[in-house]
Image (cartoon, rainbow, N blue to C red; front, side):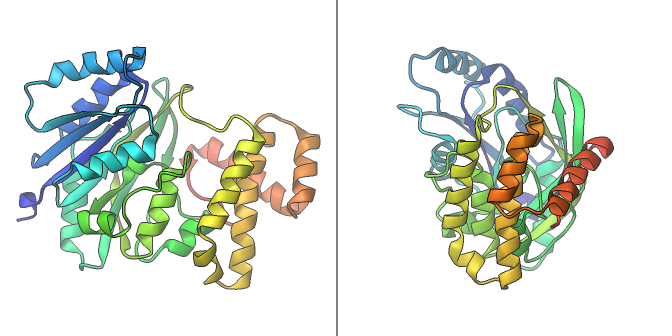
Length: 307
């Protein structure tokens, strides 16, 4: 019965056209066949990236389940996802970044899981692996289910990518899609709002490959990180204020620790010490945080940090 439900797979595409074909193929090879695939081209018209993307999409002109939509100008990832949502017709909506890959049974297992659960469950994620240049970086070990807004805000719940989520259509529409003001961490912002109105389910199997790439949109400096932190805390201030004072303080600390990684990764000890002092990060907490990063790398495991 659950196979009757249609799934819209939305692929926002910006640059990285050389990886797009593999991404689309992974969506086409799903064991769950009742799907539509919506590729939203967010490259600027007449750019090399637009031309390269068009060449890839020309390979799929005869496949009716694939829709190809071009933006009139570069907007951002959130806008591209919202365009995909607007043109979607599925009972479920899934997002797939244009450099990631679904394993064949991802959609089937996620739909089956949500169809078996009570109606209050509207989001499903799976295990995943992250690779760079074909080599394993780490794998996701998160497995919690239920009401998880607090854990997401605290930074202890981590599913890595928007490519991991499958959601009921009504959940996506109720929260009005993605916040286009967010240039970074759009997936996290979207997940927090969605988690406020629905429970989260989990499929205990690796169903997603996340391909890390040096060309990806990453934070280039500490000011970029700090601006994003400020935007994040301001956006969710009402949610955060609902929590106990200790949790509120820990959320602020967790966001500051995230920014502090800029100095850790670049081995700028003096700048790290100064940043810690300015943001009330104790030496003990930063040591615990660094040990967490080391352990994650050694074990090749991907999970959130517990203050």
